[in-house]
Length: 557
Image (cartoon, rainbow, N blue to C red; front, side, top):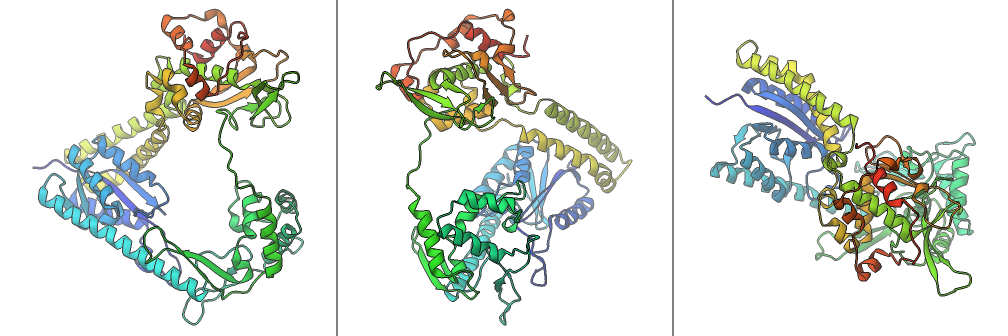
């Protein structure tokens, strides 16, 4: 007799249509899918250990959003938490054949079976594996057909000048036309106490840009008048975005035209721009529109500044709180000598770039030398420990009910109903733990050769690693010209508060040969040049190594 199945239920929808045009498949929500799967579980006498669902997430190759719950499903499968995973149909799992085969391989490796479309698939069985592969190919083909139909519809709408997608700010959806196709009309709904309407705002913004007014001034004026942002896309801040304002001068829909790039049924890599007269009213005249566009284009340099400073836009000023930037200080008497420095916008602080970077790098290396490194890299602290305890408590409760069901005291249906609350708590705890899982830089941080290969890493990679370890770096003002680490405060990821260099107690500093090797690591001149460290010939402030060690090993005695 086969042991009772421990099953994970999974549901997914790409999007949900509402209204009279919605079909049965469109309205098949994740809750309805899970309800159907629960019925199957009760009938088959399965023990449900978790219910996962992704709403608004595509599983095709056109997906632009990660499926967090599906990633947790694969994690639980790899850990051997279940013996069966169930979904409404194969397309709920995957619509990409290669990813589908990867899931099948993962299940076969740990002996997990799959259930969908009313049957169980054993990935270790050759016939079942062949059938599952065919199903995955069919799911991907179905997604491709849907995309082809959508692209064909977009192309047809563009050629005929009909609207597609969400209307831009200043326009709104009107009543469908005779062919039940969407239409756009002018949005004249008052959005401010002064009676401003979206169409009035669009005309005002484009006209002001055509007269040469700066985008920043227009933004400040709209925010000051409390004009609502388009579509509520900036609800978090309640302020207008400069990019949103700028885009108005490049949206030809405001002058009643359609310009859309089409790649459907063209050779790979080729596109074709379709232009047509739009079937909705224009909001502004051509002369004003193109004058605004010309004004904005004349201000562009076409250059993209390369990132030269590792701590730029990351370290902050301790006075104004603004991020610092990199700059070059040219010596007044020696015009050939320029020192790289970090300064804030108001010049409250100015610190040698190579010295600050070297000090922060030493802090990083000493932090990575701690014996509890793995625990430090798992950000979350108390929250993680509470989540682990919550998960263990939920698992113990579920196990108690499962033993009662196996002893015949209750049936699987009662078990699933009684343990649903504990299953939800377990999944919620798993989410917290998964979100605290170290970043993609985890393997790099554990590399023992990192101290010697650090200059070889690109600036962007070094910036990512520092952001993984440090929560903030604050530069405080100092009176001396020489770099003093006591006026630099850092906050580690997972730490509750920042730690200033002048607050650490160096009396307990204990150096070991290994730690001295880390701080005395020598790079070649070529490596120093790659890291941007052109070291002057004066010494460091006294005791900076002790400060670095105690700061990095704070809380560990």
